[in-house]
Length: 142
Image (cartoon, rainbow, N blue to C red; front, side, top):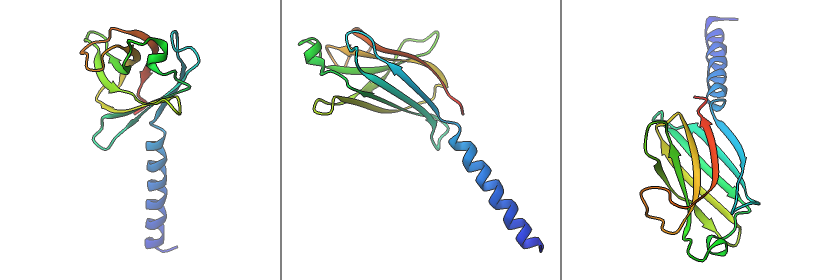
């Protein structure tokens, strides 16, 4: 085996190991929701984006329409809770009433935090005020 072939094999192996390692750095968490959104299932994924921050995805299936739970409710809002800080608003879940599906994509520099989703009467509030339907601790693997 000549040196060029050996170098090519080494680089290919190194690339394969590196690519596999980066995929292993994704945190995936499944969680059940609580009252008043009993039957929903939540999936949380946290992976590293190209800037080194976390790319957070929250997907909630079988989620009741907010107005069906309480006519005064406007929607679902996700928050990050870091010890010693005020809750950080991640955003409003995009909700499909037809599919009973809520989803949010957000970037965060946090590596360890609690994710909560609340049922809110106003979507532009600076802090959570409504019922917590999801509360899950998340730790990045990257």
